[in-house]
Image 1: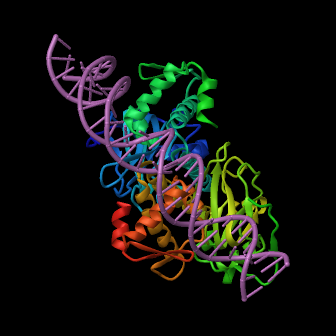
Image 2: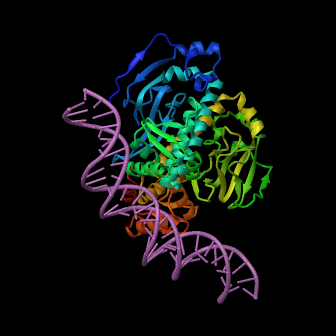
Image 3: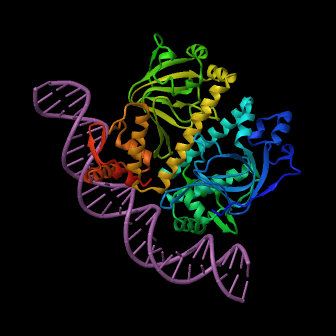
Length: 237
Length: 237
DNA sequence: CGTAAAATTGATATTTCTCAATGAGAGTGG
DNA sequence: CCACTCTCATTGAGAAATATCAATTTTACG
């Protein structure tokens, strides 16, 4: 939400030792291509709460998340907000047909992205179908996730929403880092509410309920899954 | 839902005079390519209510909708259903990463599709990046629609859902056919409810309410938009 | 340490769902 | 052609889930 005052780092970074090398768009490039690709992107840091881009802004860049978590959201004219997803390292943002972003993106905590100017990136893709194929894969994966989320939003109860969210988020963190029974939740309760189509009060009460039932323990900056089977049962698939 | 007993038509059809030639995946192909492409697809008809493919089925084909309307949906284990979209002529179905369909698709009324076996189609794409680019465009467009729908499901009231649905559906029909103030609704109230994350009763009541307020008239197989401004106001963006 | 923001908790309101009954239209067989 | 039946849609009454409003409590931060 804040105006974006960014720090650009221009030295000492190479794609070859990038943390997301294996999972991001660039996974499709060979060593030679990677060296060319290196010149296209620049690392940019965003502080907690900064807006990386806003809905309806003209798209000038694409972004590859390197570190941190972002909330991706849309606002209704009266201010109601729906978070359409959280972006984690390896996620690729900015693809659209209209030339304008179709959602906004803020940093949740410190974020580093690899930013590509639209023009050069588009030209680079031009004769590299395997990169296009990779982008397509990412889009198809997101589409599948989006459909899953529609089911959650349209057809699940508050308890199920919260339980599925915790399991899904744990799964995403698991894909990135080490396995852990403590699930770190860098986003606020309001963010969770806006992601699940609930109010902050309902989310808070549901967390408390899960804790009272011994399914989770609410800890600093996250939760601990005490009884995973129970949470899975609540998530109802 | 019914078992699929289909009719395959093998003669007398050419891509060049296909109704969706300009809007579908094949829009990206030139005349020469189109002649080769022609051999890959076969027209298949489905009767009302037939299932074209089911979630979790291994993907053996891709589908290009030529005529009719399909409902695309996901089911929870206990039978709750979320319709994740309606497919219309020009829509391309079957892309996924897992090798399995991630939703089910039924015909609503008679449907004709152009069906492509996965293998040959994949090979055809291989060295035709512009076709891949076209598929990517369609995926990105769907992703954008999916996000819009998340906002509707998570943050809009029943009235807003129904009003936006009517406007959105009218818009989609408008893109295909002639403009019209009467919006044809081939899907059932239950389908609409499962698309909007409501119950059939709430949808029915909301239609009645809109009619009482003079915004629409409920007619055979659809509605007539009497007061578009009012419906737009209700849709709240 | 003091202040502001975030989270929790409680009481009540509202929306939407559920359950139940009725009504309307389409197709079928007598 | 009409009665019958089946499905789909509508309507009503009451229940349940979640939102709203308000008050604390807790945490984060300068």
